[in-house]
Length: 125
Image (cartoon, rainbow, N blue to C red; front, top):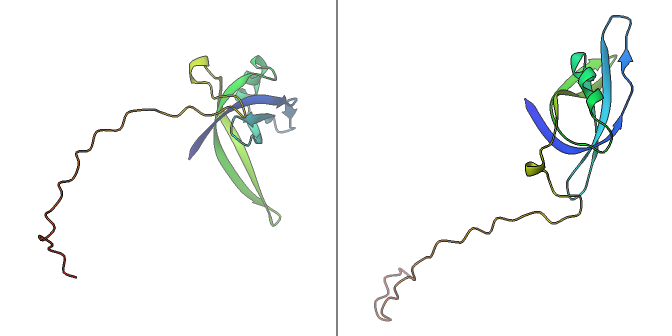
């Protein structure tokens, strides 16, 4: 299952290289919600190299998967970023604390209900 989050790049960590040839790079994105959250993601292999084009403060869209595993009786969850791209200005979320836009579409007109004569009551009680 894929997820997506939009936020500001807060921290870009150095690439981690492992003896097996595997490498990854972690980064933190601050969400643009009423209560902003700092979320740490991992970019694996070639995706980690693409992070070099971004700098702290950039607004990004991050598409990611959840990865879970068990090791020695402990359970771990990783957020694996598989696509990171700069957010376009037209779809940018409002700044933290700013009111969200609300659609002001007009409500359709509802005709009034006809009133029944006082003596014409068909209720069973």
